[in-house]
Amino acid sequence: MSPDPQPDGAAGLDALTLAVRAFAEERDWKQFHTPKNLAMALAAEVGELLAELQWLTPAESAAVMDDPDLGPRVRAEIGDVMIYLARLADVLRIDLVDAAQAKLTDSARRYPVDRARGTAAKAPR
Image (cartoon, rainbow, N blue to C red; front, side):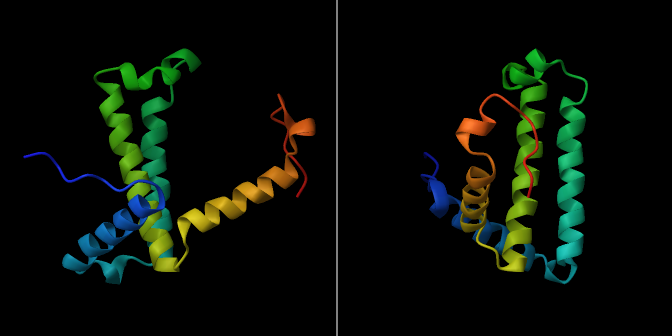
């Protein structure tokens, strides 16, 4: 039997959020899922992702998913990051897609193409 088709885009994110919420509720973990705890767990998972990439050269990091040992570990850590981000946003009642789109709009204003192209300089707020 083939797996159920996965939703794409915002629908996929909504489905993930609901699945993570159900996972936590089934285990009675809501009591532990405060914004502070979830943000700390998210930071810890980002740290685990960083640890996988820390000493790679730029070329090695660009090709990390081609590595049969490291690629799956990076994928798993990104999965952990996404789970905690989805759960944190859910607890805070933040729509991740709306928040990201708003941030992208703000970044486009702060970093217009004619001034930001080819430079990593930080823009003023």
